[in-house]
Length: 163
Image (cartoon, rainbow, N blue to C red; front, side, top):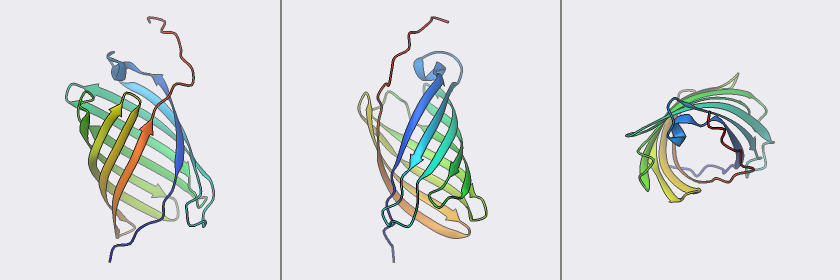
């Protein structure tokens, strides 16, 4: 019988170190992301934190992201996460997305996962996503339906130097 899992919330801040291919320049784009993990709705967890390095490359047919993330989980365990995300063309209002990842929560669990879904670019700075995820965590199957939103805003604008 399916069960509904507890919800969780995270807030993430991304800094683009070098925007290259994401802004029609040659070469990969590089970013770093810091996140705060809020306690889950069951009240059985604490705050956590994450830090990630992201390398991405945009092509005519879509965008590929490679992510490496270290995390202190809500249960206060060390975690390492590596993933590849492939998105359809950025110019499409609704584009397909797939993600494959491996995660190791040290001393706790290992997870291999695949996700497929859609991203809808509602406005320039607002995207909604819906996906299905299948995973195996320590030999046990995990099935999820995921929904989310991404809102982008600038904290400050840098002048382009033309370099």
